[in-house]
Image 1 (cartoon, helix red, strand yellow):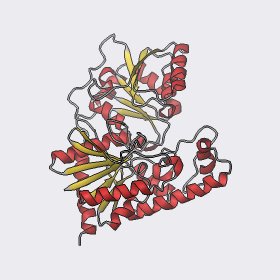
Image 2 (cartoon, one colour; image 1 turned 90 degrees about the horizontal axis):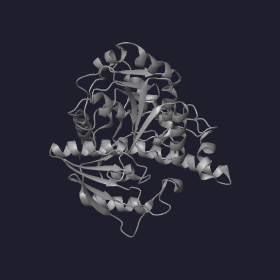
Image 3 (tube, one colour; image 1 turned 135 degrees about the vertical axis):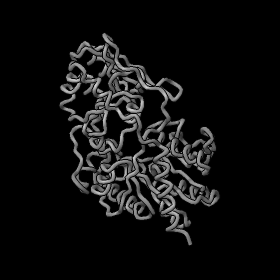
Image 4 (tube, helix red, strand yellow; image 1 turned 90 degrees about the vertical axis):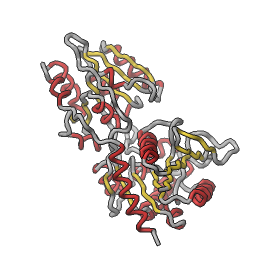
Length: 406
């Protein structure tokens, strides 16, 4: 089967959750004999070349650098990119286009595929389709609307746009909604990685379209499990991923105050001022903080050095790959109850806790004899993997292709 993936970005330029899922899924399909080509935009500004062809671990990647005005602040109408995409799809003649994110190419992609007679699947990895900020995490002083309302959206978005007339932002959001509803209508199959993500899209767009739930599972094969905490060994609590305020990093620092532990942070601080705040607060509270910086696929996984992984996100999470990564390495997990993380309750090896109760939860695990050991013993020995997701997607691909077959 010839498959085209559409993404807003792709490794090695960016290794966020959507990018790593797309890369792993492409690799799985390649190992099964399918041919995958990734069509992506990226963060590099156009420098005279419309299409840059790369190889990523045997996956053909075609990057379409954007020009000024072809970014989110310029709206979703990007005719030059859409025409380049048309030529690429006509040349590649894929059996199916799997859109992982339309934020790079903009609107008109799935209607174009329908016009060309190409089957489509659109995976709603995050909440971008319902929110120009992607994650429905408004800046301080603003709040997300309930249901499909948009009254609060314009002032929230205008924090960054700073338009002299707020009506311009109101109209732009309304136009965005119309374009994205057309994308939803054009897709043969819609998927989401969790029940929570599917329901939020249905509620906030709103849409009556069926959305198939296809959980990601463990993205990379794991061979080594972390050692349990030894007798007399200092408890190592930590988190990994992008270190930003919305992921609850400061809340984790506060929750570790007074605990007999080390706090390990793995990943990049995306804002220097936030990094300074975290380091400063940890010092004030007397916490032994070890910030290890960015890590790559060639480095030992951060979970291997932890006794307890904590992901106290404030976002409306749509899945949580880092949870799978920790559990796959045998490390028990504590997560907040935000978004899809609440769905993990009862899956073994983790505790779902309201963010306000994080300190109490950590203290109980750190100080109760045997508490952490019991949590570790509950970590499943077998977890869903990307191979399972690939199998589920192939069934959906067949269904989508059958709908457009003459």
